Length: 114
Ligand code: 5GP
Ligand code: ZN
Image (cartoon, rainbow, N blue to C red):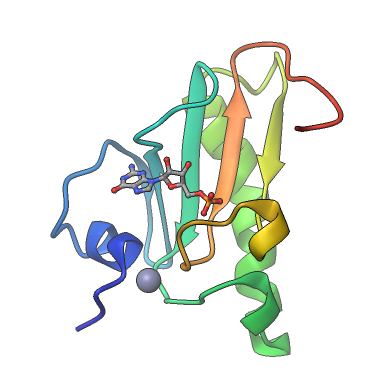
């Protein structure tokens, strides 16, 4: 069994505030929110980072992005706007090595990001 923290959340071994779930994706609120809405969207399949993705996973990753707008609507930020962030590797500050999309919104977000 994977020791990965996000795999454990997907298996419901660690509690999380789950916002959305289907057969291949689960979304839950970030434990240290950086905005009024900060939800993480992950594939249930363990993929460490974008660098390890394969052509076969193109559909999965595309479906996650398309589902992100539904999850934004569930969180009430589809009209006000939102940002999707996919950190990859050391300079991005990636901390958890199970690929995840940050969904951020609920306030005006600065650009460029810090
Ligand atoms: P990264 O920096 O890897 O892109 O983002 C990892 C995110 O996962 C961080 O925003 C961090 O707050 C969040 N996180 C880390 N551990 C947990 C956890 O156990 N539960 C939840 N809900 N979020 C977590
Ligand atoms: Zn994992």
